[in-house]
Length: 360
Image (cartoon, rainbow, N blue to C red; front, side, top):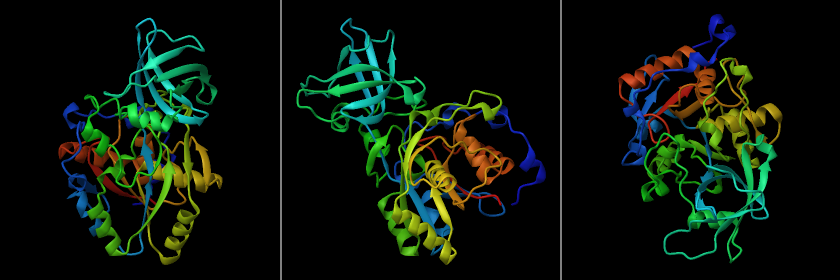
């Protein structure tokens, strides 16, 4: 469906992306099986209510699915200051030299140079500590630099894997469990560095991937280390004033070639998740295959790579609501969200998904 002139030239504001979501539709746990979640297909004349394992029926030989292979770190660490005050770190980046950039939650910030004891995993007895070096300027002062250390000199990835907690999104109210350790991670997660999962890819299991392969649909991978900023609502009514968070991405040479080959055979480039969209369109916009991106995709954006999108249902007033509205059209997306709520779809990270075609 082409853009109408009114949609193309309309000045959208933050309020346009707000909606009332019943709290009971926010999924607190994943579906019993990954591919047993629901799928809302918008590619036909009217929406179809499907099961995610039906996705192969919507694909054709020659299509290319592009996944984000980032791996979620056990990025949440708890500690205690010498005064007894509690502290929580959410590690967003590993900087090298055992340094990390982290969000800090504490009643009173420790002094620069101070070390705090971190709580190790049950049954372990390590001298696990975080030493504050100061603010991390790359995040406009929103994060702090720490050195993570133990007596064995292990690197931060090792320490987080052993002692950290799954960084569940703020709208999931239970503490992390073994279920979360397994299910808040894609089956092909490879490169550690994310504090949030590329949630559209959580629906894929090995049997579904095998069925997709059997169709002659190709697969390729990018990496974007999803940051905590993905959960931040846009706060400025004039959305052009919003400052996007920055995330590191990489588009490997093999994926660049796979996209070129897909174009040559007339297939569709189907991004699995908004993180894959942001990665591919950042590469197309800048020509940089790796680096940091703070791309902000809003209605009127000129998509260069992605033809279709598999995505979950997003938070009101979020930059991701703006991205999917830019991709598939504001009115169609809002109609799909109304349909999803009426049909009791499950929302957000552990929720259901939809397939969107790019509005031309």
